[in-house]
Length: 92
Image (cartoon, rainbow, N blue to C red; front, side):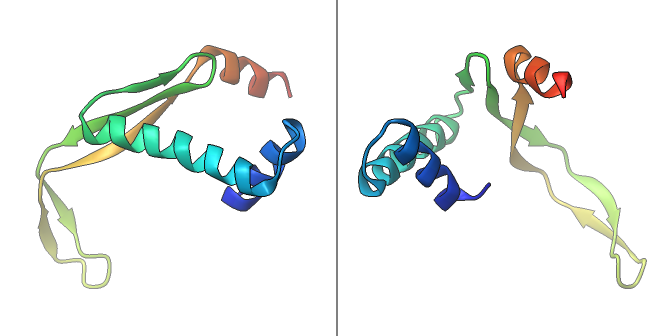
């Protein structure tokens, strides 16, 4: 499912216009983004938790040449699935 499909789903479920559903989806995503930028974890109970994790600098390999390269330290977004979502997915 992409963002447009999610907007269509929200518009159908509420029911509301696609414009209002798009604003709702954008607002929720913006809230998650702002929380992560502030180094906060964002927990949606029953769904999961988004958090920023720091990665250490490490040795890697250039996939084209096989030569060793240095990969610098960084930050990445991680998602941990919540129990509610996990149990729903595991039922299938």
